[in-house]
Length: 209
Image 1 (cartoon, rainbow, N blue to C red):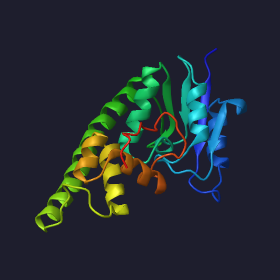
Image 2 (image 1 turned 30 degrees about the vertical axis):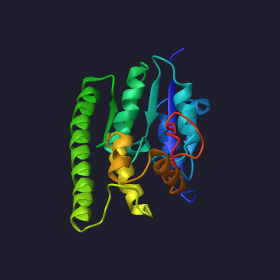
Image 3 (image 1 turned 180 degrees about the vertical axis):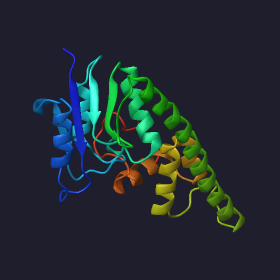
Image 4 (image 1 turned 120 degrees about the vertical axis):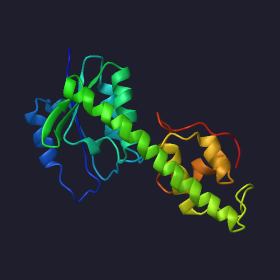
């Protein structure tokens, strides 16, 4: 049976999900098919109800959200999730996108994600250029990034994560910042950039420290 699976997310526990819940129910989502995460960000923080909603989807179903940013905090995140849904034969419906109800199964929805893909590539290039320029400036200033520095700063971990989220290979980014993949994963988890528990997005360790 084809279903509408609804998902709502709020970033802090003080916020209220009543508006998102009402919009999803009004769109035809059954209460039993509504998943809500509270106190979670849209990046790679743990979102148990988000993954539960994805697991509940079957080919032909529609994943319904109130606004596009419920999927993630960057264009790359949104595109990755939408592609994952498309590959599984699942449609994505956004109830309020510029004041319009957009479904990826319609011509308007198809055009939307074509535009998003172009924006995602541009975002990728901008992030890559900014971070690599920063690395180049540090090298010119005499700060060695070729080997492992005594201390990898939290800022470097966040910059590395931005590149990886934009599509750069993890191993290459780690080398650029003078650390191993395992070091990046461990520090990124400490900063809340990666989920603590293993799951679909938890990468394999390379065994280095």
